[in-house]
Amino acid sequence: MCWFSVCRKVAKAVHYVVRAVAYNSAYSEPRWLYAVPLYHFLTKTVKPFARSSEHSSAKHQNNRWWGIEDFVNIVDHVKWKQKTDM
Image (cartoon, rainbow, N blue to C red; front, side, top):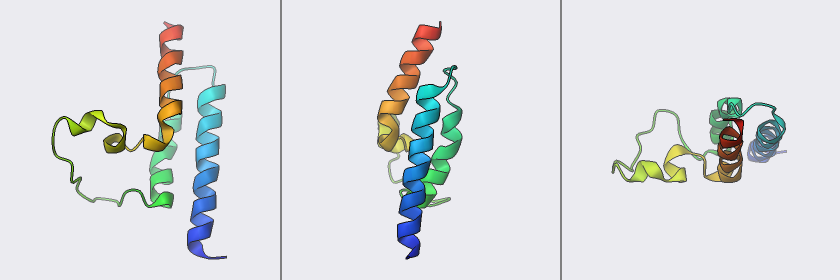
């Protein structure tokens, strides 16, 4: 089995665990965010210590800049949960 295939499978597993933790947690605290850098490393969506090509201040408002484009539904769920916990 090639290394890329293993990384892709582990990345899918990390995404599954992140989703399960975010949706089944009794708290709205997003501890699942600790696993996002591992997901980025495995999927090679970002490279460590690479400069961002998006320097505009408006770019920081999109999900790609934050690195959560694969986790949008989870982020929305956590935001909703935080509002209901108030």
